Length: 169
Image 1 (cartoon, rainbow, N blue to C red):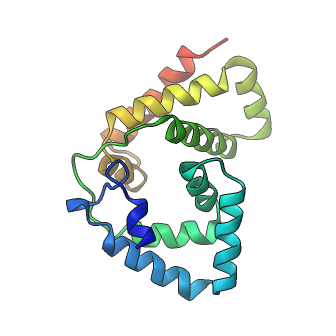
Image 2 (cartoon, rainbow, N blue to C red):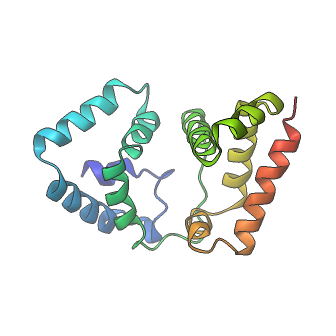
């Protein structure tokens, strides 16, 4: 029930707003992988190290084992074709953190240092997040990694380039 409750109207991007198949899959996998004590430690840590629900979710998302289970279940779900991510200040902050983390992972330390000297990193990520969340449905976004040469992948890359250009010091 808590899993289903996490997918409120602004977060439920499943076809027919039906998060139950995802939640059933995820909960089953989590309970197979972790003991109840381990789950309590993970959840308590996320609650204690976050200011809000969205931030707590991102902390859980950073757990590689949980993320693997999440992706296994999420990738088998049907998503609404018309559902967009509705950004709140909390979600925007989390998506900016995710953008920064993923950018750091995609660049060498030298490249990252050069990037930071030329581009306002926070503004770049805010620009990028706002562009892609308003331009793509959740379904389209989830397909981009599966089809890296698709038109949407190219559009996403162009958005990133545009945001770099718009946020040069």
